[in-house]
Amino acid sequence: MAKPIVEITQNFGFDAAHFLEGAGDTNRRMHGHSFYAEVTLRGTPDPEMGWVRNFEEVNAVLAEVRAELDHRLLNEVVGLSTPTLENLARYIFARAKTKLPEIHRVKLSRPSYGQSCQYEED
Image (cartoon, rainbow, N blue to C red; front, side, top):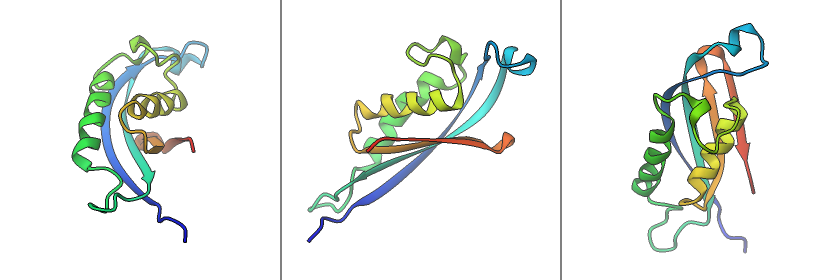
């Protein structure tokens, strides 16, 4: 019999500025966005507690990641590289994975632009 798989998701938001050199006049100038991240963990539930991971632990890790990005110039964040939506999703995934190995997916969105990006690994 196959083991059950459960996914849990925690959301967080942050506001940050960035610029994208070589991306046209508008994006080349520094500008800001409100970003919303959905971080999904996936795994077999703990037999005793029934959860993949305690949400308190998840929130603590994501608060650290949020603090690295919130109200920052993303071009100056070490390890981020070019601060595109795709690279931001990958960065959040990598930073969270160091303490949450069950991470499966990060969906990052900018609702005011109707844009989102999803990054995942199996």
